[in-house]
Length: 109
Image (cartoon, rainbow, N blue to C red; front, side, top):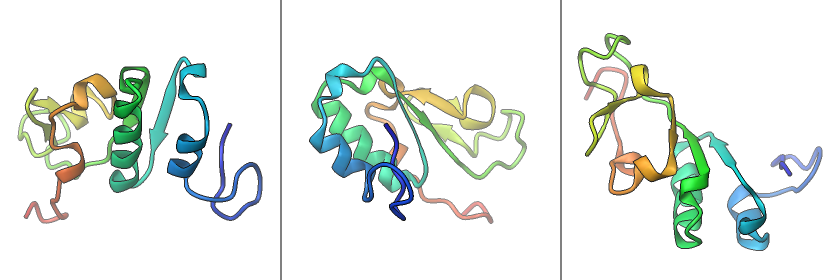
């Protein structure tokens, strides 16, 4: 199942609305990418359904070195690096992380 916000195919609306309407237990894997605020809500829905371990999240962070040295793209508390260890992470690794609270611009601030 997939959706398009423009209503071109499938469901017209937000993916979070679909997740609230379907039986998540019927899916072996759930993949998500897009704005982090949206993925954070997907994560919360899946965590509440105890399904976050079956989900993969594609994260996007600003890189400085892109080889895992500088730590600009680290995900706490594990210190995983989006540039080297990702960009796709299992939902189990995002529990208690800065996943949805990350705010850094292109300048590194």
